[in-house]
Length: 331
Image (cartoon, rainbow, N blue to C red; front, top):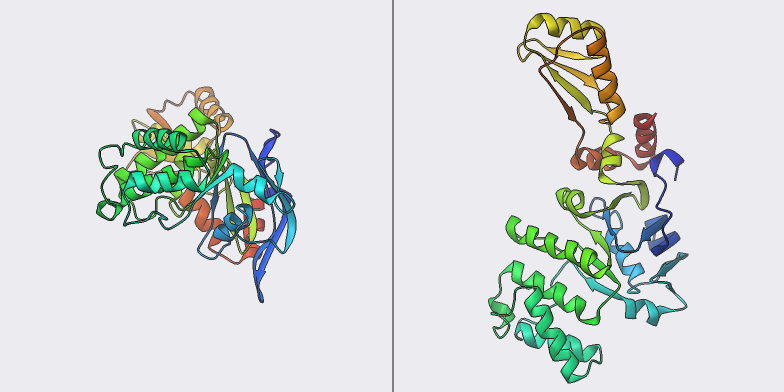
């Protein structure tokens, strides 16, 4: 993994760390030596196209399958030598709901309490608390088969929390939900981190979800991490950012165009687009040039690529080209 592709990880003590994780299925290499460093009480999102290795990464870190090579620690426990410690510290919500449709919501949660060896009193207390927190109290004694998709996913996440995990793996948790249910899930996930200090490892196909929730995002392609950083950092690395300057008359537009020879003019809209990474230094420089030349602008707005642009740029071409493209964009 080349240096320009991945920004420096946080120096905080990681709750999840991995070095050189590899996994193959026969001749198919799924993970090609990935490194992860995820601080406590943060939301980390792993993006990538179908088949990139996202679910395999979750399965390895949650002890469901073994890596072929590499080392990892989760919540302070070695993934191989301290498997029971890892399992006691984590909760997993997979792509597909794991609730029992024939049971009620309350019965599903009580079953999880039994599996965690909670005594009857504590199990009922925790069940009632989770039903309240997830706004499922009124529906608690209804069969899950009657639940909407959003209610089912909320119950699925509530069941994950019965054991009070320090780390939660959410593998595409809002797939199939309507926009309102998805935003409700976002608020619940944010609350888990803010109120309980859990660490969330999130995989998702919804780029807006990663943009809204994640403290850091990594892009996985062909089994390799091709980029990592905050959403804003990733957006700034992709070509296409610009400052859009609007003028009140054609004379000011022409004067500004002469000052910024790399800009693109739109005579009809009286606007000039100047390439920019979206940073404050670029904006100050543009304002200084305009002020120095006494050219008056009506408005200035900054525009940066969104995560869709990041995703398509980094995963829409052969793996060998992705890192070099990002390096050129960062130069």
